[in-house]
Length: 262
Image 1 (cartoon, rainbow, N blue to C red):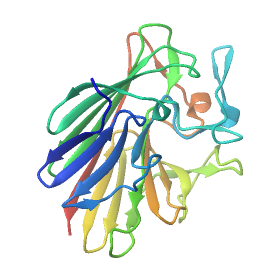
Image 2: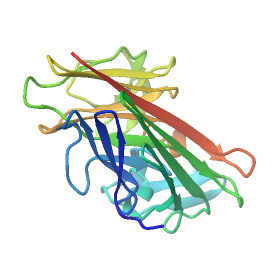
Image 3: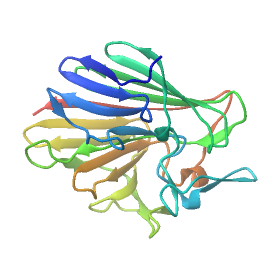
């Protein structure tokens, strides 16, 4: 199938899926209002097969050290799938399924599948990584760039994490968990009951980002946008908290954005 943009609609919600641009969500319009920052590198991109930064771009799988390109020197960041073209497996008016086969520089064989499902009041993204060859560590996450301002007051971010990962000078977790601190943030938080973050644009819209996963990075240091990133592990997690993809057990994750007018 073609990797041209796919537009999904449900009620007054419209989502643009961009298989050819890293499998990202290029836009989310609700009642004609665009919620995601526009541009080739923005929207909402999948972070896979890892999330956030890998220290020095290197990770171990057993006794083997693997080196990834330093696309955010001195680290490697956000996986490789956002840089490739995905294939369309299925599409309908309100749903699309796209796939991406992992290739070099990632050293393992695997396939990523992302399902995008839209209803009038929610968008659900589901991703899996599977392999029929050797097992390997991986992570799944999403990196949305929500507009800070929709034409009224700036967005307010509300969540109640159990802890914050202490951030070192290299922007990576030190391994210490600390009491959540006030923003601005470029930080990872733990929510053992599942990710639950509310974005409120006063007198306009409330949007909840939820996920059964317990890790979320919140980044609001940029003037134009705020990022709320559910993921299956912390930054540098390929080294500190690896999740294995095996021929018998894929890695799967899901996130839902639900909204209401206020």
